[in-house]
Amino acid sequence: MTVLPANEAVRAAKAQSAAAAEQLDMALRLAFFRDSRCISMLHEVVDVACGCDAVDADALVAALEDGRARGPMMADHRAHADEVRGSPHFFLADGSDVHDPGIGLHWADAGYPVVDAEDPGVYEDLVRRAADAAQGAA
Picture (cartoon, one colour):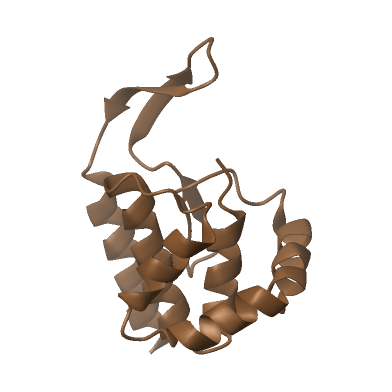
């Protein structure tokens, strides 16, 4: 499964606005992880985008068809490939980052992750840290 079309769509939405990119990114993650939709297919990505009120879906389709977001997306990937370990990977305003917060896992011989432990309480700490950083910046 490739997420290239989804990533390219989020990059194209970013040209519309940060809000459009953020809304589409979340919608695509929900489509994939929650709804098991195949976000490697352009028609699925576009269908998800049509449900995002901050995204101009027609402009998004035009950007995906002419490829204007692909180059900048790949340049970002090359520049930051060593920094991102997977999804979810949170980068916080204080300069810290955390990959798969609250998850303990191992990789099965077949090449897929097996979750051994989960602590959903870590998200409260992440939100608190982000809020503290935002308040300190204000």
